[in-house]
Length: 76
Image: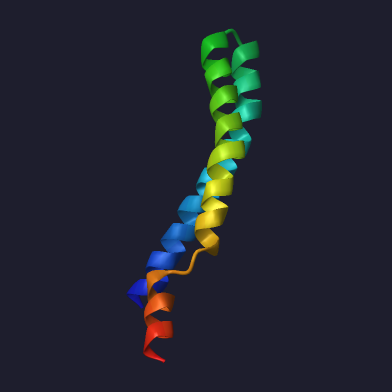
């Protein structure tokens, strides 16, 4: 039961990070056009880095076997 909750929280966290990286770019454009150019540029830069760097790393971590599955393969 605890493992199921832990996996759900991990999925939710990764989904939030994914959507945040996608939304940071258009939000940065709007913020920059409203007059806060430095903040807008930082949002665009952060969103771009997150999308092209952090998201692929999270995808690779999803492909790695978990410690539970490693324990199961050793036993039987």
